[in-house]
Image (cartoon, rainbow, N blue to C red; front, side):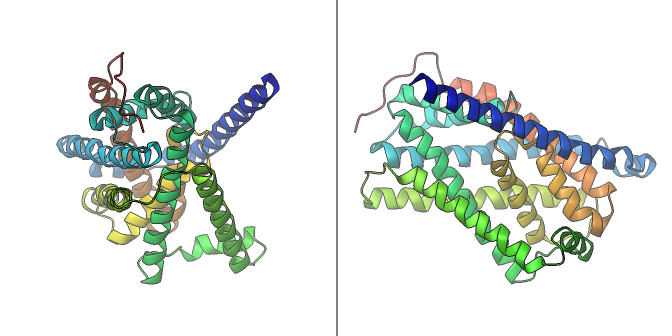
Length: 322
């Protein structure tokens, strides 16, 4: 028993340390772009008049995180087999958002398990709900991105394709196919792990929970994509397509699940945005835009802590048993 516990602890530490390394490398990449920003040009673009807009964005971000919290409640109820206290589940999800920065995304999950099990669901169900959350986000994210690619709203720059071709030895299709296979295997793995102990029947109530979950996740991706589009298009004046930015946000958000040990995905999301946009729009605007967006999400997560704490008292009442 002790050896199994030690293995789990070691695995957790390896994932965290790997996340730190990847985040550090990604941040170094972002740093190189930040130090090369044309400060005079940046000063002409950045304005104090943006502050009210950013405050509105933070409020919208808080609302959209409530969408994710509600979606998690549906998954947890589906696995638990009965209703759970709405606002306390939402409070747990929002309060623990800040934990993903200290020390990593994994702590956000650990905190969720700690609080949620006090409401009745088993630890296994809470863990399974986390994996289900990843599965549904990845599935919906793939639908959004692949649809955008299919209609021509999202594509990679020729420069980036050239770099990928060089990296993959000229076999771009084989490289892309390998990524898709890896993604498919990851989805299957998460789905199997989430549902291996699944005992709840697909009742009409559960089907409605799943449909509501899909709607909430789609609204989240498009809502956050809309905020990012406003930053790039309206504040920075970039000539960029709406669906392109929604797909871009979707990719960056899902990037956090690829490196679960990275604290809040810091560095990972910035790296993806700059890598995809810099070859097309130059380094300045994408770097400024994603840093502004990072300020919104970090301040939003900080605000979610006291809001979530309102609904998560020290002694949490028992939920209805199955």
